[in-house]
Image (cartoon, rainbow, N blue to C red; front, side):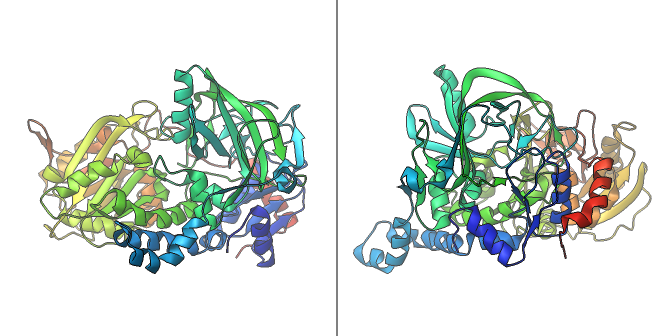
Length: 590
């Protein structure tokens, strides 16, 4: 099934009793977000709030908060078409008449992809124009009590490369509302929109920007997809939809607008203008702190006469972005071997914030081929922000992280299979590095035949400085000791002691709470959002001329450290308010 806008999608959810319509008055300041978090934790329904304090617009959230709703929103066709297209590449290059005829159905499907111009009279988004105080009454959410203000959390930010308007980008960059005509624009330097803004600054020109809210669900998916830099996101949206995307010219000037969008916010970012933006409770599960970011000046807003405001709430995994990320990885993964021939499959882990951990099954047809493939992966688009990359040549299901880690540790010799690169780029939201956008990377290889039998239960002596311990998987032990503030050298002391006593566990993770070993999601989140490889991997090592030879065990210090932002927790009085009002909302979860 393909949906032309959010309207038919929400209607199908309503008929399926997978949409809760909340008519009770609710506050966009903290209350809606707390309701949303409880529902998504229970894998509950999508939410439509029809009585939002201070706004004439209803708010829709949690539209993609389960695998079922994501599958419903996009259907199996995009994945089937992508798999068929990749499988047909060898037949079609070079093209022959017989090969083209055999794939005629697929080629006809591809001819349906693209943009279609529509008239103003048939474009619902042009129902109402607002030029005076254009953002007034927009029900932007404040999700966490220490956020810098209300944020637009599901914006589809459209820009074009200066001088080359056919090269566009559709990205999702949060927008803090400063007043009725200006917002912050968290347009990160590593993303397509950031490249366009940088080019505009080199020209000393403003960058025109149009922000779409709503429209076909495929637009939302394409905006967050880790697609190759030169793949137009509007074209990807059309592929996901299975038909041409209707666009309409803006009568007030500027970019084309998706005809079925709920809102279109048009304006510009001036060169070299910055303003403090944040804090913001982000999908890493912590507050991203206040920093200077570009300012978006809004000239006018178009919206439907009965516009619905789409929003999401982010925070500690798993949230709505987890389920969208799953779909996009399944959709795009067949294309990775075309770009990187040594890659068999590749996965990034939503529980770590995506960029903190990636893994791949790779080819090893000659010695150290996997290392070359690692460099290839780290040179691809958003994958350049990967902090930890694990590779194996064994046919494992990468979504099963325990299985992957066990496979790697069975084959891993850190003297030759661990590489740490300092002074590299970091995701803007990852605060484990020494400063914003800077950090380090680690590559771990688990190639060939097993070289050790891994322990599954700890039977050794008491470890000095360790209060509690739990195995996470064969070969990986989680230990709990003093906080970093009390003993910043504990990880170093552990690595020395464990090496001297012949510890048989190749990987030891030092955490503030050993219970994080109980679940795969908690282990991934706690470990990979709290360590920077160059600073927080400890081992007895030997320095060679060009490479450090690490010994075993490796100790990862995944404790909270000074300078890390606070973990996200809801405000207690809001928790009590939602407890008290829960029956008023009329939401049924399983």
